[in-house]
Amino acid sequence: MSASNPGHPEGVGGGPLVEGPHDPEHDPRASYVLEPEYVATLTERVHATSGTTVSLISPLDGAPLANIPQSSTDDVAEAYRRARVAQAAWAKTPMEQRAAAMLRLHDLLIERMPELLDIITLENGKARKHAYDEVAHTALTARYYARMSEKFMATERRGGVLPVFTRIDINHVPKGVVGIISPWNYPLTMALSDGLPALMAGNAVVAKPDAQTMLTALMGVKLMDEAGFPRDLWQVVAGPGRQLGGPMIERSDYICFTGSTATGKLIAKQCAEQLIGCSLELGGKNPLLVLRDADVEKAAEGAIRASFSNAGQLCVSAERIFVADQVYDRFVERFVARAQAMTLGATLDWEVDMGPLISADQLETVTTQVGDAVDKGARVLTGGRARPDLAPYFYEPTILEGVTPEMTCFGNETFGPVVSLYRFNDESDAIARANDGEYGLNAAIYSQDGDRARAIARQIKCGTVNINEGFAATFGSLAAPMGGMRESGMGRRQGADGILRYTETQSVGTQRVLRMAPQFGLNAEQYAKLQVVGLKVLNKLGRA
Ligand code: NAD
Image (cartoon, rainbow, N blue to C red; front, side):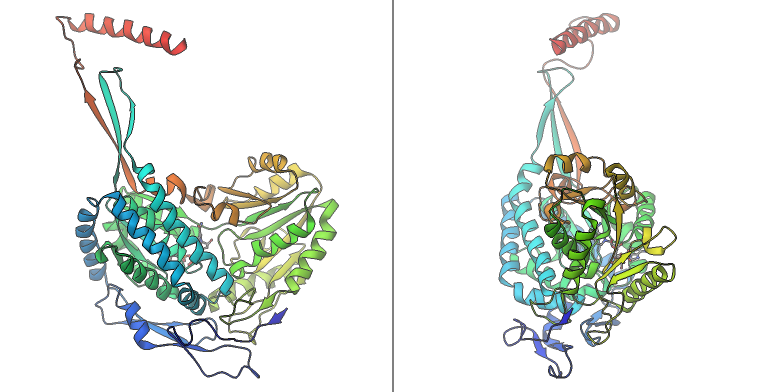
């Protein structure tokens, strides 16, 4: 594994970055500083009057990056009041106008990509190429819902109780104000992409991004302002989730939450108290299956991306790899070699394959889980150690063998660059082991027989299954609903499900000519008999 030296990020010179003091010859760690004026243009978008701030540090070097103003409960209330006023006007805005703003947002995301990539990497630590993934996903989401929302939201005609005489129209009406609570791991797309269909459906949004990645979320919101969305339509509040979550849920008409299963359960209970709906995008312990007929080279390459993208801090990343006996040794050799060839670095360069973890907490979880596995007999095939020489929270890509159920990392989500290998000789056994546990988010299958892999996919209890790809085939396809089964979540983002969750279904029945009561001099009994004859005729016609 090699370390990358800091180069010249695209933002320096034209963008918000000034290079901090560092000595590339003797210290491969980068040090970057953001211009205070630039930070101020972002933080002014937080609804906060409390006067308190929280310092945000960069995982690239552990140095302070910005101070983020914090919202009080009163600020949350005011954010909802403003959002409600804005929503009433927005719901009357024609769909073409909403779509035009969304397409402008798409273009701005592409145009301002270098600046976005700098901010994401600085704040989150992820490799620039993985920051690109999420800018692309956000832009694709904007374009998809700009183009498709009119179709998804269109009023549908359905058959009525009395054919011809009863007309039924199904409307999809906006819920009102949607609360979005998002995590730090994909700070742009998790903060923005779920909200874009909410806007297209005619809702307003109050967002609470994770405290560790506020700047990225705020930059996304600034681009929305530039794209022409009314400013009050998207409110941002900042602060600890356990303090702001309750006040948000009390005032929301719907909650979209992405984060851990433990927090998701708390959110679900509070939403139940308010009788409001919620979608919950939660954790996973995702399996990847390498079948005996897999192209081993492609499987090894795919497994690297599936396990170590964003340093494994990815809800859909593979943490358990089940490999058929026939190809096990070849796969392991290729997989380990590729992991060892990765370029590790804590800089803004494109060459970096994996960056640091985001925080001391994440490093602690990873170190503890690997230590526990090793103490109980697991073998480390590569990695297995922190790299403070690269960045304060760096941990090497780690491949384990011999992981058993008593080890913490067997069934618990690690959310780091750690993956366990398991051998199998019977595919039904591999499917059962992949389905073991409580999670059900994402799975991957490598095989050269697409039909066979798709048949196996139906037996896997996961909301998404990718064949000959780790996660991007489904996650990148905006028409494909994405979400978890079992403890990995409730509801789906993307596709029609991704927008209709933010609507109430309203049925409008129009009765014509015949009323729904006795008429033409018939009494109640005669009317009932006539209806029974009608039902029999309809039944026969239905059978014909
Ligand atoms: P987390 O649950 O600790 O925090 C997520 C968000 O919830 C943050 O904004 C946080 O401030 C807020 N929050 C925390 N406690 C809260 C409370 N009591 N009430 C309201 N809000 C609260 O999760 P995390 O550790 O930051 O994120 C990692 C987890 O997210 C992993 O389990 C990962 O798998 C999951 N995740 C899932 C998806 C998905 O699409 N399924 C995507 C990304 C991340």
